Image (cartoon, helix red, strand yellow):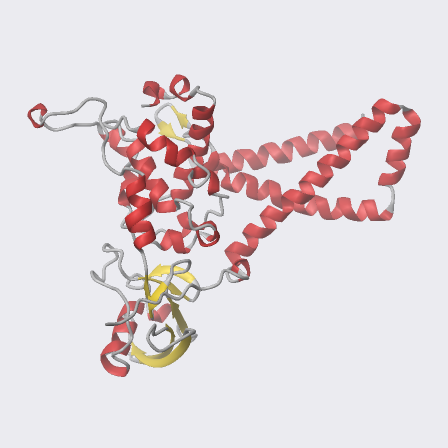
Length: 252
Length: 130
């Protein structure tokens, strides 16, 4: 490796079979200018301690598997470079607000199995559409209405950034509500009514206090805070029964 | 077989761990000062309806050093509140568009700050010289 330097990586360790409490373990890791934080962890696993457990897959910020707290900030570990932390040390913890299964591995089932399906994240058309009708087209402008919200990779950084989710586990949370907004603002969708109960409920948009950190940490440029807070307006109009009157196209 | 025994980390002190959350908490606390200040003004309005003597008594109470100290602190918190209010306004505003183009976030924030500053100067001039 060219220009090899050495950095201290402090890693959160928890072994459910032997540990009652988690602990931190430090490693000296050689790195060069192009070594990502994820590669630092892989170096530890390959050369220093094979028992270190963490998730990763694509190494290029698209699979959403390698999210960790890096010096207290939710990050994709493949998306950050060790050079930017040197000469300081790097402290790596599992994503905040999730139960820890082992070392840096979190239990995501709450979001993946309960929250995401509950927003009915698929097109709910006004009338059943047969395959023979051909492609369900829309204009570039209609695509633009929801495009950024469709970029979510389910990395859960926004949940780790949301203290409301940490304090109140039933809150649907940033990614699920942004995904709901993605379908509600699709010109081909007419599913507002089947998603409205989840959106209007105490655990829907109204549990958000606009901390805004979710939008800050999103590696894909999704703005969940905007999706949620714009829907506070929609939810209020829905409550007074005027949403369909005031929204374009009858607010389907 | 390994037993699944997840470890749940405590939330205690969460807002002190990140400067972003500290700023958020100051924003939220600032609303308490906004509320107390608004109540003080409302009390003044009620005293005004009760007669001149009552209104003058309320004004005398405001001249108390403790009251002046509170208003100084409240002014700082109010300024911060106004700053952060317009900072997040682009997220809370409905989808604003001029023609077909969405209004840029910075324009919404800057417009809000300008309006707040303008209103403050107008009210100050009215109270000071009218």
